[in-house]
Length: 228
Image (cartoon, rainbow, N blue to C red):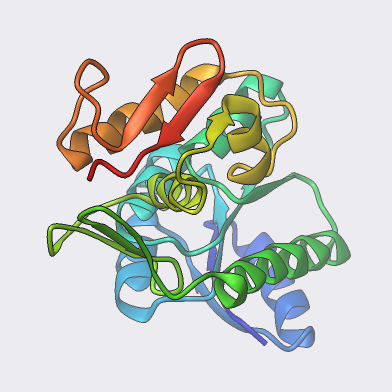
């Protein structure tokens, strides 16, 4: 059983999905606006979010990015958009999975089970803490501190940082990060990795020209280094 936040403004779809999710044993919290959903994500910490993109107050992709700035809750996007570019944009913005409309109750339930299974396995298998110099990462609590000060990281930034920190001294390719962090074998946008590395460097107080923790190996990938 999971507490699922259903963000959908179509009453017919909301009623049908709520019934399917409740019949499967989940607790459903339906809302029709992104602003309300953001408050619930922050205050009530649901286990999973199903997010429609066609919301009346905030564009769904913008809402997804806002959620990612405050929470690492798993998000499944429900969308009528089918192009590869749209899907890439959604995954890059922080979606864990997506379903294209129309979809059946059985389809969304299978997606929910898979996303929750991956999320719980990652939490259970994660080490209690990783220390790299003055950087301390707690994968189970999804917290990171530098010199005792908490780092404000998005879900993807934290996942990238933790993955690299677990492999100090190893050069990790962009493709490996896409496979293991984004769970996508072929996204085709290396720029997505570069952008997240750039954001991480800024929060770690370093630059590409003067790296401390994150060193780029040209033409290969990136490597976490203990600066001590």
